[in-house]
Amino acid sequence: MLKNYNSQLKKFYFILISVFFIITIVFIESYPKISGDLETNYKVAKNILSGCGVSISALGSGECIAHFGGNQGPAYPFLIASSFYFFGENLDYIRYFQSLTLLLSLIFFFITLEKFNFTNNKFKLFSILFLFSPLAFPWIRFISSDTITISILILYLSFFVISIKNSKIKVFPLAILLGIGTNFRFDFILLTFTLFIFFNLYHSKKLFFIDMIKISIIGMIIWTPWTLRNLDKGVSIFPTHQQQQATLNSSEYYPKGINKWLSTWMTHEYQRIGTVYNLNNKNYSKIKFDYKDSFSDEKEKQDILNLLNELSAYDGHNFPPQIDGQFELIAKKKINSNPIKHYIKVPLTRIFYMWFNYKNSYGWPFEISNKINNEMVKKNYNLSIKNIIEVAYQNSNSIIGKLTISIYRFVIFITFFLLFFHKRNNSLIRKIAQAVLIFFIVKSCFHGYLNIAETRYTLPVYVLMQFVVFSRLLKLNFDKR
Image (cartoon, rainbow, N blue to C red; front, side, top):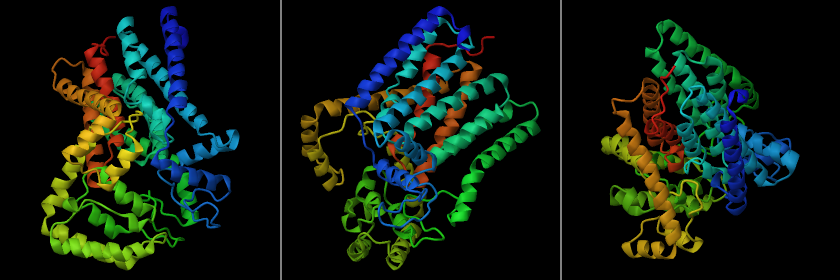
């Protein structure tokens, strides 16, 4: 395909790629980041290399209990294990590999779009904006599946654009990408809903459903080897919740009761720090949260505090089922007393915070000082005006950085919806915008109602929104023959 590029565009891409690599090296070497996902992914990767396979059993414990996939799907732990096997335990190799996959997926994306014969200067500007997106680029410094997932998403978008142009789903590549993507992150399957915009593009609805069946079959074929492994190991064939999950051959007990109770009031990711993370790591005595947010009355408060006090004696052990059963009874009573709050108000509040959290650095190195952060954790991030002023004064650069990236996100978000209702959108961009809107709704509901709403989970949607916004503002004409 590159042979078709004119010399000017080749030179432009050579310079662009060179600049990308230079910035990548500086960024990774200067701001490497260890995320909360690494602990589990590292443990699974080391268990794979030891011959135990995909397991979250403690290293050196002598225990080897099979698990569905560790933190998410099995692909990312296998990637880490492969890097450790060939290059040693140097995490930077994984970071560089992630940046390479992002770059290659973007090059393929640009080559795909170049077929539409856009005006060179407009397309060059589009390429610069997309390649150095302040939303996707910074995640390369993390040891997490986010960058790999975005790379697969960009490839998916490439074939999705071609499919809309041809009014026919590119079944095989899209199905392969969906299958691979779900092996890295379970919620990648939600992209399947974007394919429903093709229902009105097919002249024969029968052919549309046949193509959707084909995609389903290919996806099942991709997952068949891992499903057979899970059946052989006595592991659930469906994704497990967090890291504590009972399997057929394990003494692990997943505490549904306390998680149900947490879902009755938890609305944003900062509340997970003192609750869910300590729960998953079996540090029950460290579970803490803001009492103002969590209790509906004094009796519930006293009952929960008594249970937590009893639970603290089980640190490092499986969650006791008898205590979890009492949490579940309290949760059910609370839900039945106010179902509208539980099923509507709390999930919608959760969704709002997921999209409009201005405190999130979104992958950038805008972390506040450890001292201030520890003080904020102690207060469950519920700060007084005096605390906020103190944080802002001592971390002015980080605060400015957080606000800048948040404003950028909000501008993309608002601009997308303004352009969505703009009548002058060309037909291809309008259809992609419809698909992005579907993805936005489905993903919001998924994370909001399952109480796994973190701001970073909005990244795939923002990447797609950027495509629509940049294409529309630069007036790229996809309808041109």
